[in-house]
Image: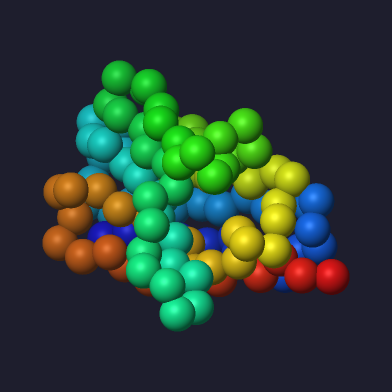
Length: 111
């Protein structure tokens, strides 16, 4: 099971740190990813980190977002800096070995 948290309301240019807690899945051994879905739009890829530790990002967030793992807590973290209004969405974590997406967390970037 996956549970995302850390969302909230932030002003443009601000930062937020999202966490994805995994139960029954060892994050360090699996590909873990973040996706987001804005109102009225399709879900889109944000970032992923492989078991090797290498990471990939969507062009729209490259240089602003950083994905990492906290192996001791078995969580995946998405550090989001220089947030823009277009980053507003429900953010969910994903892994191919999970049975479902799990609950997402809402990020709203607005002044």
